[in-house]
Amino acid sequence: MIFEIFNNMNGYGIYVALSFIFTLVSFVGLYVIIRSQLIKEQKKFVVKFGKLSSEKVLKARKQKINQEILAAGIFSKV
Image 1 (cartoon, rainbow, N blue to C red):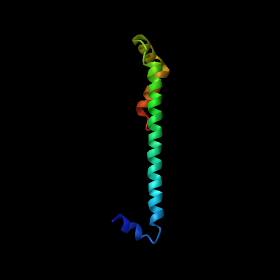
Image 2: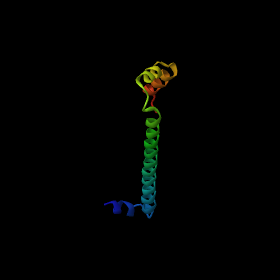
Image 3: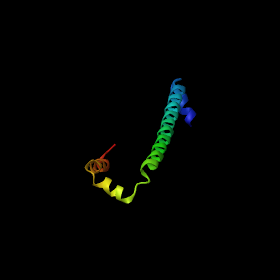
Image 4: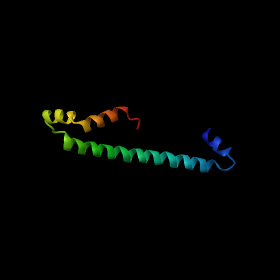
């Protein structure tokens, strides 16, 4: 069925199929790269901030700049 669709495109079916495959492979590659970078950054964050004492955590939550960052993160559409 798919081959019939590509054959009915007046010889341009191969170009459409190749561009679709290229786009799909590019998106999968981009996803894999971004996912691996996210995991690496999460590990760095845990190493740096994962060992905070409870009083340092409370102190950080009371700081104005941290409250602004947390509030912006809640309402961010990005």
